[in-house]
Amino acid sequence: MLAPSAIAVVQVGAIVLGHVAGVVSEHDRASRVVRAGELRVGQYPMLTLMVVYTGTGIVLVSAG
Image (tube, rainbow, N blue to C red; front, side):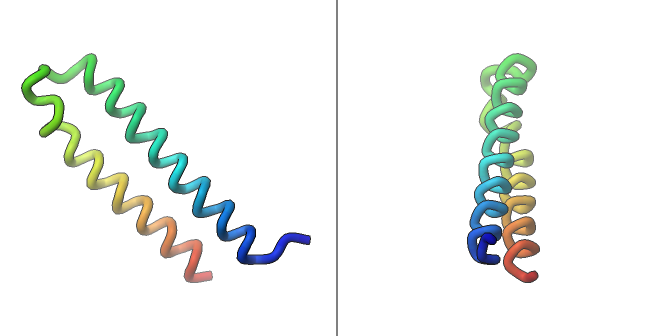
């Protein structure tokens, strides 16, 4: 049987890795769609959203 702390570590790892994969995927897509001069600025909103999602997910896992 796994300890609750081990389950929480796996869940937090999955949240972080999933959100990193989402940001990388979004960057790849944006590099094909957005003009080169606007690439970095255009990705800030998505990066901010993913950081908020990651933080919220970690808070929800640790609150239980």
